[in-house]
Image (cartoon, rainbow, N blue to C red; front, side, top):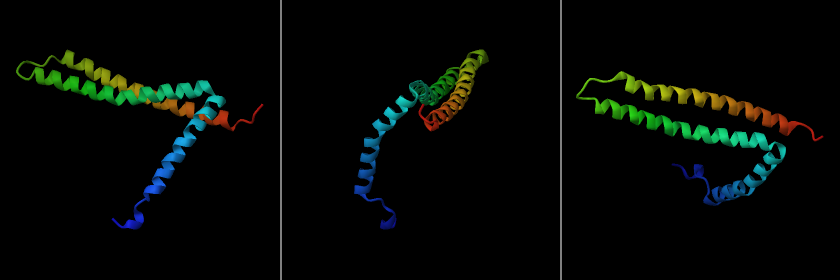
Length: 116
């Protein structure tokens, strides 16, 4: 790779320091504007972060069930339960993403409102 495209170590370190310096002020500002929306946004982000791990775990459960029944007849009703859970997690993920978008729009409205 050409050296002119490599970021300078000092520049990256400074950028990280600036972000670390600004982040508490941003959260303080958002908390002052609308604490409820900030809390709801954090909860939604936490849930959305857990869903992929839950989907992977449920996929493992399905694979374990299929492997366990390799020599015998597959009991589909046992396998359909984790499949239904994965489907429910996908629906929950879509709902959380939609709600998160609405919360972000409401936050922008609160931020852009003039002070009363």
